[in-house]
Length: 300
Ligand SMILES: Nc1ncnc2c1ncn2[C@@H]1O[C@H](COP(=O)(O)OP(=O)(O)OP(=O)(O)O)[C@@H](O)[C@H]1O
Ligand SMILES: NC(=O)c1ccc[n+]([C@@H]2O[C@H](COP(=O)(O)O)[C@@H](O)[C@H]2O)c1
Ligand SMILES: [Zn+2]
Image (cartoon, rainbow, N blue to C red):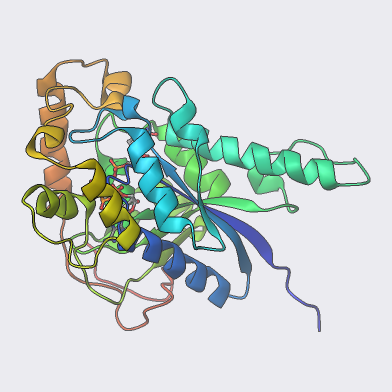
């Protein structure tokens, strides 16, 4: 019997990581288990890429500190590491460019190790050799594709069409419904791996920052080394939470040309509406696999 080929995968998670939480680390484990369970993939490494300060998100502390926390959180992992390239760029970098960067770097490495030197540059979807870079995210990230002026259509098309996405469900979001309603996501649904997080939780960096600035415990939801680093450097306060408070998020500014704070407020309000799609329904019973063609989930 012919052995089905196994694709090597690099998982890339882009985000603020302000600070990194245990859920961020769990996200990688859930994604790896899910992909490897299919028998079609082998996950080689996971990369955490903290966004640069130029992203200008409210309450975003310096990237050197977010990086250090991510480094501490992953120092004992044998497969998850921090990617520094994104934050070393002078300006905020579109996510698709970060993915391209890691894809190109891996491709070059593969090329160098190839003796025959017969490789030709080809687009990711046409390449059967070498590892595939997949974007790893939570359902809120996926649903942010629907926020006007936040993402370029062509970037979404490239991310899901050429590279692929692994999305972890998150309380308050319904990625099944979101994909069903989006033409581009539906078209590329086979490249979107939805992983159902069976342990319902509402862990977020926002909750952690709130607890920390109020002097409360992080309730074991942050790695110990990260808690110590935060305490030693007195990182989260009412003041740090106000950082970028009156600035427009860089992607919105870039895509809409709007530098006014009201522009951001309007977009933030749209985000709220999006989050309102909140449907608690998860895939019926199967926690690991969701087959769009097999399961009907009553979307209007
Ligand atoms: N509890 C969670 N469940 C699923 N995905 C999550 C969870 N927490 C974070 N993620 C994902 O981790 C990635 C990085 O997210 P991010 O740094 O924004 O963390 P966050 O907890 O959402 O922080 P914040 O509250 O500041 O937005 C995103 O893709 C996000 O969707
Ligand atoms: N157009 C884009 O490429 C685009 C838009 C918004 C956010 N992002 C990225 O998504 C991530 C979002 O992080 P947060 O969920 O912490 O805001 C960041 O890495 C950011 O750079 C990319
Ligand atoms: Zn977030």
